[in-house]
Length: 80
Image 1 (cartoon, helix red, strand yellow):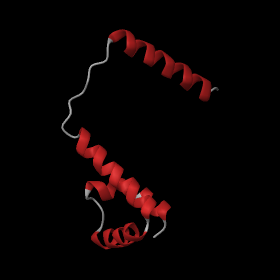
Image 2: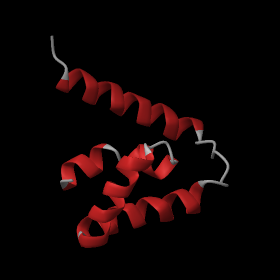
Image 3: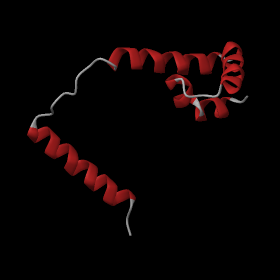
């Protein structure tokens, strides 16, 4: 397995939705690839950190400004 293949299946692996045969190949790759180990470890830590947190309500002024900026960026990158 190559790093690109591992990264393409990463969400399914972390969610536990990966075929057991592929999971074994995935874990063999992880055992010998430090960069992929770091990515998977960071994702696991992020999930653990945020899984129990509650949504935060943005202040209206900030939300409106953010939406405006995102709309402008969208228009700039998707000009017809």
